[in-house]
Length: 458
Ligand SMILES: Nc1nc2c(c(=O)[nH]1)N[C@H]1C(S)=C(S)[C@@H](COP(=O)(O)O)O[C@H]1N2
Ligand SMILES: [Mo]
Image (cartoon, rainbow, N blue to C red):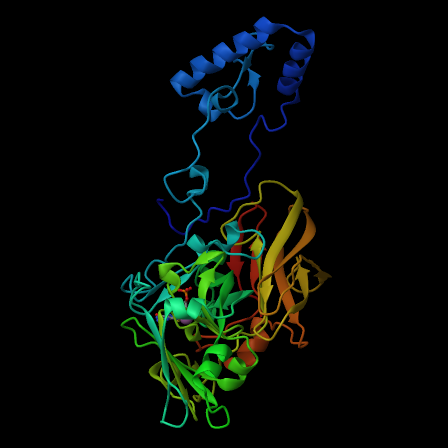
């Protein structure tokens, strides 16, 4: 890949022979006439082509170049024997999708261990992020931890807080009652580069620190109940990871008590990927990614917030007056149009499906409005089912492009009634010096050339 910034999700023109009715017609006519030698000839031509490697490139039957229009050059995949079943391992995407990759933002971090890779939102459909394209955020690199050696310890901040502290093996955790739920995880720093001004060109970089999976695991409440936690005094937990980053985060006990916080081992039907915390991670729906502690090895129950380094020094929001906010965990209601989006090219005027994603850390998405004139007029988009609690929601809306410059935006409203703010509204309250929790409305400028650019409107 020469330029890592160019997204793969270009709106591709259909191949020339996409609706080659003549070619298809020829097959039908000849078949009806029962001319067997026609079919034989067509096979022979295709076989010759396959030997030269040429027929492989052709996916529809078309007349041979310059020859008899009734003689078809059939592609090898129509005439030959295909590949055997995949017995040697794990299935992979088509070679033609090699462009769809997680990417690092050049120059964003100094090492590839304390770094981020962004999910290619412009190339994804529906709400589930394939596990191999889930964004990554590591503070000190990832590990493939041996599950037979991994342990989860549950203890109290003093002797009375937890009646019977325990150390669980993975086998012991996987015997417990489990649930499976779809949730998004968004790094608090998603869109963080855009606080002051436009900084990155594509939706992969503006919004790609979000992913959505079906997570499977045990509600943390069940594990704490087994250990006999004093929930009157123990109003907070501290979650700790087993990697070298000393990733520890405080989580209020209310979130655990409603059963939504999970000790998860499953992601999209299989075990978690190593990059995402294999074999055990915390799932804290609606809360910023940093609290979803990976390689989870310890839960401590205490009576006050822990003010760990990743909540007292990092993951704080600098406000316009010079004060900073702490423990701003919830990911507010947010949305983004993923197609068309920055770096893509509309090849012609006419019909386009505008598609995007919406989410809220406070519940379900109630509504998404879309504007193509920079927020002057809005139309309500279709929400695709399922619309789930603290999950991504897919929206779509029809658009006929007249070939003139357009400013495309989406604005989400969640079930609490909260409406996603404009940059102007958000900056009035938050200033421009934060890193985290930028959830303002994104604008894509479609230029007359069809090229789509990231711009900011207030
Ligand atoms: N143990 C551990 N847990 C961690 C981190 C980490 O570096 N180490 N990074 C956190 C941050 S900041 C985020 S955004 C999410 C990212 O999860 P992912 O890599 O599965 O996308 O994991 C969180 N949990
Ligand atoms: Mo993060």
